[in-house]
Amino acid sequence: MTSFDLHQPVLESQFKSRQPETEFPHFGRDALDRNHAVFSIIEHLNALHLNDWAPHLLGWLSHYDGLELYAEDDPHVCVRQVLFHLRVRIRSRQELPSQQIKEMIVDRILDSNFVYYRAHWGIDLVADENSRVWRPLEQSWFNFLQEGDPHAPLEALHIWMTDKHPKPTMTELRGHLLGAATSR
Image 1: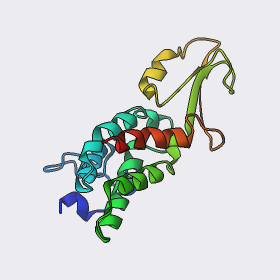
Image 2: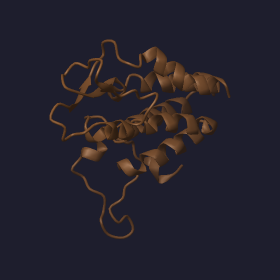
Image 3: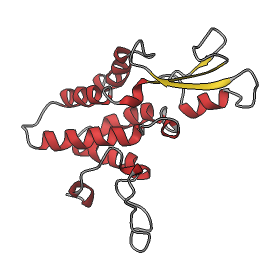
Image 4: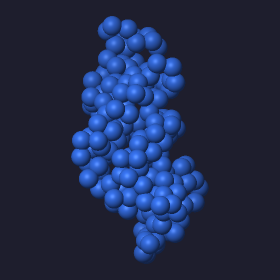
């Protein structure tokens, strides 16, 4: 058991007032900080014997990198939290098939608020045919941001969270995440 396993992560840990020790040996870093989340994700996937799925899951998750600057939920921290809780839960049960574990992970990820965020560059709050819409299965958040011009008088970045008719749909997201999972 690593030192990470001894402390339960808190979903909002990066927003807590508790700061890691700035002196030796931590120098301001903590296993629960956002910068460490991706390493924790890999650690949890390895512990769950899903290391072959890590490139696909992290590739998808990378499309949400940067969204935490605009949204209340940090995608990396949310996924880390899902994996942590599932890892603790599975540890206390009989071994489950890998596919079943992947499905449990995906179902819990799709319950996270960050997958419901949508955005577009456009004139109005509602996207029209001239708007440039963020498509998280096709492009990263940062690539989407580069498509717009924040100084253009007739263009603005619109970000919202929706549970009605999200695009991609939860079925599409689930299929994407499990598509690579089932082909392995």
